[in-house]
Image (tube, rainbow, N blue to C red; front, top):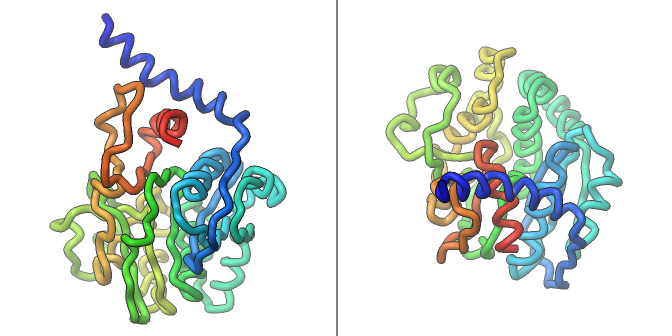
Length: 285
C-alpha cells in the first residue's frame, strides 16, 4: 500500500511542480562570455522546457555561450524573449524559416520538404544550416545541465565533426537504416541526437541525405532525424558523452527526490519520462 502510494506521488507531484514553477522568477548571475555557440529550438508547447534548460546553463556553466534559439513558428519571438529575460549572455531569436531560405538557395528540396512536414525535419534543417557556419552544440529543450560541459567538448582542427550522446536504446528508423550505406549502427551502442556537437560545410551532400529523405517521404517519423545523425556521427566522433555523463534512463521514476550523481553532466528527459524533468528542476536547480 505504501509503495503504491509512493509510486503515485512520484508521478503526480512533478505535475504539480510544473504548474508551481511557471510562477517562479528566475535570476541568473552575471558571468563571463565565451565563444561557444549553443543552438536550441522551441515553440508554444516547449517554451517552459526551454526556460529551465537555459536556466540550467546560466546557473551551472562557468561562461555563458552565444545562444541562438530557433522559433518553430508556433510562438512569437517576443514571448520567447520574455521567457528568457533572466539570460545575461548573447541571445539571438530566429525563425526556422531562415534555415529554409538558406537550404533553398542550395537546392536542398528534400530537406525543405522534410522540414515543412515534420518538427524533427525543422531540427535537422536548422542544425545543418548553422553547423555549416560555425561548430555548434545543439541542445534539445528537455535537457538539464548540472555541470559545465566545456572540458568534455572535443578540441579539433578539421573540416568536419559530428558526435552525440549514448542512448539507452538503439532507437532508429529502420526504413532509414535500410537506405543507408553499410554501417555499424546495429552493432555499436546507440547514439542519441538530443545533444550534438556538429560542424561541416557539406554534410548534406557528402552523406547524400537528399536521396534518403526523398525515399522516406512522406512517411517521416520521430526517429528519422536521429537515425541520420547517428549515421553521420558514426563516421566521425561517434559518442562524445556516455550514458553516465548524459543520463537518459528512467530507473528512478518511482522516486520522489533524487540527488544528482557525481559525474553526471546533464540529463535528457525524453517524452516518456518528462515528469522527471519537473522533479529535478524543483530539487536540483
